[in-house]
Length: 106
Image 1 (cartoon, rainbow, N blue to C red):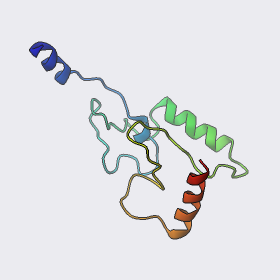
Image 2 (image 1 turned 180 degrees about the vertical axis):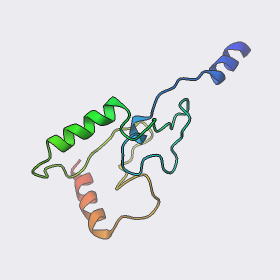
Image 3 (image 1 turned 45 degrees about the vertical axis):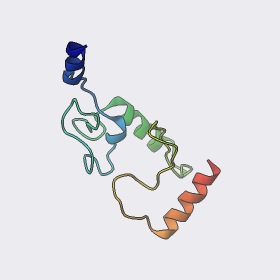
Image 4 (image 1 turned 120 degrees about the vertical axis):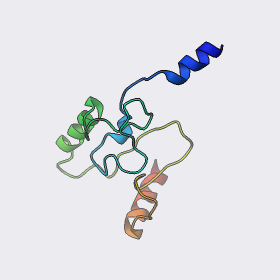
């Protein structure tokens, strides 16, 4: 058991946290440069195929501005977080009201 505990605590499983790999405020607050960290943001913004594919899909399919928001699902807790998780400040009142209305419909 001691050996397994030591091994578990010393394993490096490199890979980017795709949620931190998008270009908006990339590698700010809470993101890591260490490839084995749970919060590793990747080598560059959009360095991961998943974030690039999602970006390209939205850009290529939003010419008429249909997308109002992008929703990600996490297992952290039963919350809807908006507008962004990069800052502790509040969104402008107009944005917050619109996002709250969209969240209630979700």
